[in-house]
Amino acid sequence: MNLVALIDYGSGNVHSAAGALKEAARRADLAIEVTTTADPEIIAKAARVILPGVGHYADCAENLHARPGLVEALESAVLTHKKPFLGICVGMQLLADFGLEDGETRGLGWIHGVVDRIEPGPGHAIPHVGWNELHMPNSHPLLEGLGPEPHAYFTHSYKISPEDPAHVAATTDYGVPFASAVARDNIFGTQFHPEMSQRVGLQLLANFLQWAP
Image (tube, rainbow, N blue to C red; front, side, top):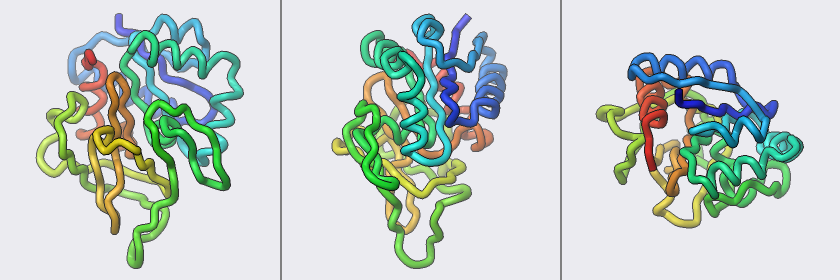
């Protein structure tokens, strides 16, 4: 059984993410067990780790660091033991060194860069909400099989800007281009919500459940 630790730290939509993971596994004929947890012992036993996140960057970061041993467990699982990791929305933004929403807030620092507000110019409302296209300049196992001109569902006002362009796995245009997916080694993150992105999202989740970086 492939144990997937879906991190529940009070800042993520864990129920819809868990449901989408189970549906993706069903469609791909994969045997998985999804557990929502912040328990370091369970995270240590998991084969894969997912960090969701919705809302305010500073609140999510505070909630993450407030769980005893959680950050250390994530670092051990992902950085030391190289388990496949997926960050979703603010869970992806927390990979950066820091975020600038209402001041400067420390992130995990796994993908060097900063999270700042989208400045798309006239004609584009903030937040960016709805379906938009993914542009994939480089191949990645999690982006395989998404089809031509894949669209995913977004809802956000801030974006991650990685220091290393090689860590940008996909971009999306919203008046200006921004990184809509990031990748480094066994780490992957999406600004969009796979659990809300229908076929494209389920394919990405199925890819993640089979990913062997």
